Length: 309
Ligand SMILES: [Mg+2]
Image (cartoon, rainbow, N blue to C red; front, top):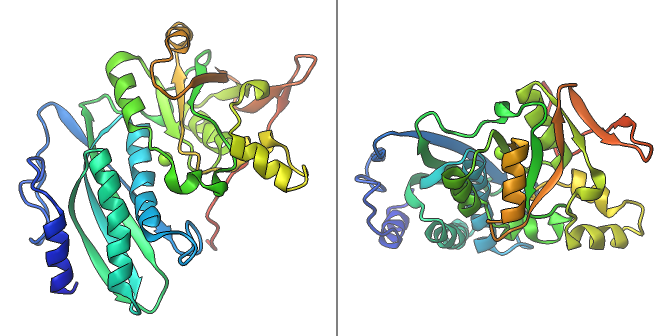
C-alpha cells in the first residue's frame, strides 16, 4: 500500500485502549476483556453484486461493507471491538475510491464504537471489492447460536421485511444496540440475522437447531418498501413475497421460550418493534397454516451466491 495513504489512514484513526497495537505494524494486537471470548466474522462486498460503483455513493458502499459484519456480530449477541478492512481498488482513481469508502466506514465505526485496527489496500485491473473482518466479544460460553431453538419456542423478529433494494440494503442499522440490550436483560435461545431472506435464514436456523417452524404469514411485518416494490412490479408479486424472500433486511430472527417471549412482546424494549411471526416445532421444515388450520409447506426463498462446484 502507498505510504502516503497509510499515513492518511493512521491520521484518521484515534488511539483506542482495546487496540494497543494497530495500523502500522505487521499485525495488530487486541486486548480481550477478562471472562470474554472473541467472536470473529468476515464478509466481502463486490461491485456489481452488493453495490454498483457510480450509482451508489462511496461512503454508503463503505458503510455497507462494515454494517453487514456488525449485523453478524449482533446475531451472535457480541459487542463490537475492532474491524479490519481489505480493499481491492481498480488502478484508475483507486486512492479517491478508497478514501470515499473509508469515510463511510469511519462514520459507522464511530457510531458503533468499533476500532479500525488494520487492513490492506491493493490495486488491480479488476472491479472494486471490499472485505471486512469484524471482531467482537461475548461473555465466555454465551454467544447466541443458530442451534439453540427448541420446539415450542416463539419466533420473534426485529423490524420489518422486504424491498431493501429500494434503499435499506445500503443504510440499514445493524441491530447491535438491540442485541446488547437482549444479552443483558433477556434469555435468547438462538439467533440469526436476515442477510439472504427471512424464509431462507429462518430455514437455516431450523436446520442448525434440528427443528422446523410454522410461520404465521399474516403476522410478518412488511416494510413499506416491499409494498412499493410489489406495486411497481404491477402486483405480479405480493408485498409478503418480498418480505419472505428479498434479503438484506439485516433484522434479527430470535428463538425465545414462550413465557419470555410474551414478556418481551408486551415490554417492547428495543425502540424497533419486536414481532412474533410463528413458532418452532419438532417436525423439520418450514410450514404455514392454511385457512382451515392445516399445515402446508412453505418453500424457503432468498439470495444465494451461485458457482460451479
Ligand atoms: Mg449472518
